[in-house]
Image (cartoon, rainbow, N blue to C red; front, top):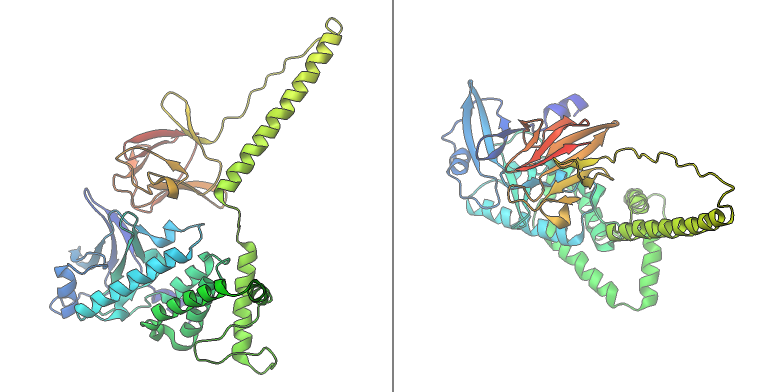
Length: 399
């Protein structure tokens, strides 16, 4: 399929907000036959781990409305963050439970949308919710999910890397047919192998680590294992290329924790304070020696205003010293935590694109406002100094 055809085959959605709920909606290309089974069962509701869905008609066009209130799509949730094995375990468990629900209601799994921007997670319950499009004729985006994993997984976790590699191999050869129970078994198998590696003698584990660093091939799911000797082995070449990519991703991935960065910053501040104190002591000595022989010049030490969010009284509430900068209530997930009941766990973020700052709502329950205007879910608006921002009921000025 050419590029234009591929673009036309992608599911397109938009975000809608009303007084009580946030929705993502999809326009259907033709009016559906509402009496068909999948529309009937989806409209009836009650299917766990699928987004609640309703069929609506507006100006003669048919739309599927999906309720996404109090959830976050995983593409936004993990923008700039790393996916660990625990998250992958939770996701696969959610995926398995969803597929069990589909079987219970006699629904086809090929109609589930897998694009990361259309998979949602409830951060409180840690449940995942998926879009289901009845009789879907478009690309459901499993390749996009694989690419998302490749971009975000923790490359220090060998078992996780091996799992994604294996799934990539299966998708390359079988396409969407690899979406079966074997995925869950494969994940359990790589975790089992990881436990065995941990029990192995230190020498063996060191050898394994060196082999991964050297990008030697891993056994694939068909039982074939490359020895690395024959140039005629196309599968081996493909594996080496893929593992080479994984190796380069591992090198690029920052292994320093946020807490370590904070410690380094505190250390630099302490060092600066000691240096200033020493310099000040020397200045005092020189001043006492030449008390009447030197005139001291007091220069204006005005500092440029710090970029951040300011309260009504002009006090700096928080400095925006990194981008993207996430605002919300869940301390472990955001850069600035607001203890306000009207603020969502992950409410909004400030980001930079092409040198321009934007404010983006992250599907907040009580809304993100810029200069008094409420933003749509995941809407971005250009951010400028003196803009008045409101997150739920918490008000600030951006400077």
